[in-house]
Length: 512
Image (tube, rainbow, N blue to C red; front, side, top):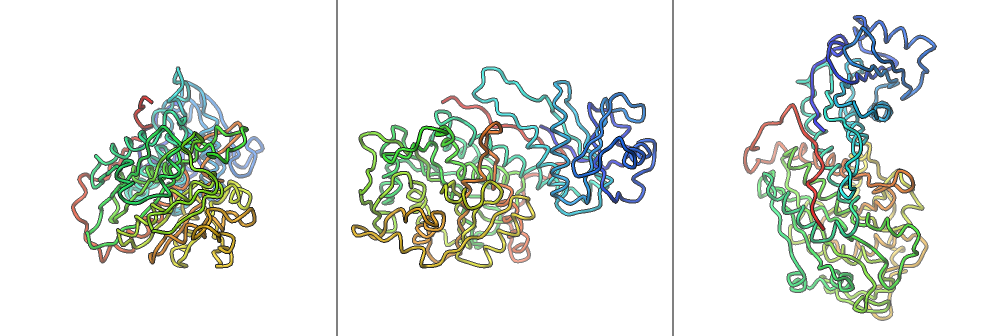
């Protein structure tokens, strides 16, 4: 879908030809918003009985003479805060499902100036317009092709618009690849996506195979992969947006492209959803797609250990002991606790970059789903400043997380009689003991772990990937870049200026 930013008053929006005009109307509109025939109509309806008051409540009509749009949709946005705008836009876009709707004008000119509102609007519109079609014989879905966003001043909103378009592109790529079935999103496929992203300005991609991983001594990673016919891939990506002297932020994404549980086989119901177990990897790929668009002045490294967890005759067994890249030995008590095994070697590898911070993202534990549900991602951190920064970024991006403890006592359950540690610590506090396992491999750099098992996808009738936490991570990186900007010198000028018109498209299909 094409996103376009324009300066549009309510009067100008009314004169714009389109299939649908969506007007967000707050409880306290800005001065002058009610001028003109459309403004008078909105004021009249807002104070009348035809338009129910309340967040995301709508009034809609066709063929009105006061607008050139074929359809007019008025939506209550209450206080005009980003969260309210997101709900209002989602409701409006959800009502525009007719096949003939190709161009929509979204007018935000009546809203009070609130940081993050524009980004919330674009995120909601992009989410509503995304339809998965890759493995369907007929591409059916919405026909919306263009969204024109009208604001009070496009010049003042351009920076936020550019960031919002970048995040929308990253979220869509993350959703697309997490949604693909396991046979259409193997470790090799993920490596191909990373290579394609490596052709963008300031991004470089390196892909390591089984031989290179063996030379590195990643025994834990190899143990998980050994039960699958699909070869593992270790993806290393670099975004170089700042001086070489600036330490990078390292993002580590769990890339289990399908998780059967291995010998500790999962129950059959809903096992199909284990294609989403590479949600962390998908989010790292999404972040790099967004970085290619936003071009912030920061250095970022992305690490994706990717493989399948399968139960064949070569698969690792409960009770086996493996040696990680760090040299620490691990007794594998449960083969379904495999995500931490591939992540621990990637976390050890991350230390070579001397990072300013390391953040791993993983659909790691069902225990986190029980603790936080699908609203907030679980956050664990060794550094209070990093935890605060990620929490604030999540709130700003409407992609929230919640910090959980890392007390040393939680690691007691990981003790083993036959290795330096076991890979599980029992049912109590399972999300925390998993984080304590990872903590043994992080080194001295500030480290955070995001458990996205409850937020990376939705089940039921709305089954599908969410693209989280791309929004949180991009907000955090933008905040870091802004703080570092006075002291950092970009390695090179950005190859192109920020466009006012941005296209967000689904990735190119690849054959399995």
